[in-house]
Image (cartoon, rainbow, N blue to C red; front, side):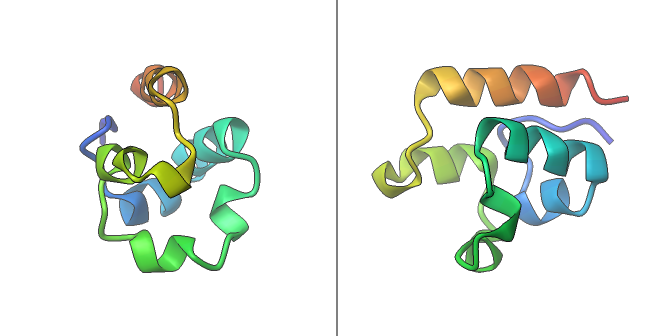
Length: 70
């Protein structure tokens, strides 16, 4: 399965490699209690929320690392 900014957070967190990418760029993301409520959102939708503190640079880095997952 290929991942990108249109991937749902629940799918990303369900894949060990994708989860590691999220935690690399957003430390503690997978352990945050609020993350479960956002599992239906895409990565791009999450980045649109100012409270998420996901800059366009961080989003680009995450997407790049996700694309490398086989």
